Length: 194
Image: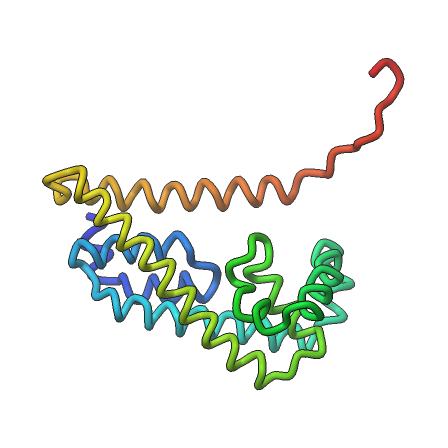
């Protein structure tokens, strides 16, 4: 069932998933490519296009509405000093690698758009960073498939289960992150009797 879905809608799922965030869908697509359900080169290309477009839209949104977004979302505004420090110290490396940084996958391009980074500079580095990210993450899924195949002789018999576990794990991690982000911060002050 999952294999048929992946074979029919895999590239579309990769594009939409990487447009928004994408690591889980890209690992699953890499695994599916190892299993022969998708072509790995096409997975990496589609992922690069989706990630590039998603980050470019976020950058332009930050350029257009950056001040309003920072005012409306204080948690986003708290990231701005971190972004500014990283840009001053290592601007090229930071722009190339922003999609690899926990907590900055979507916020990073928005904040970069609100900064003074030139549009063309971001666009070129965004494409290069997306290509690197797509190849590494889908390659990790492909390598995971090869590792599982080395342990299990008949991987076809558990293929559906492995794909379901990858997707369920990614969903559980996403839900955990959302729950954690909504929790009020713990107070470090100790009250009486503590």
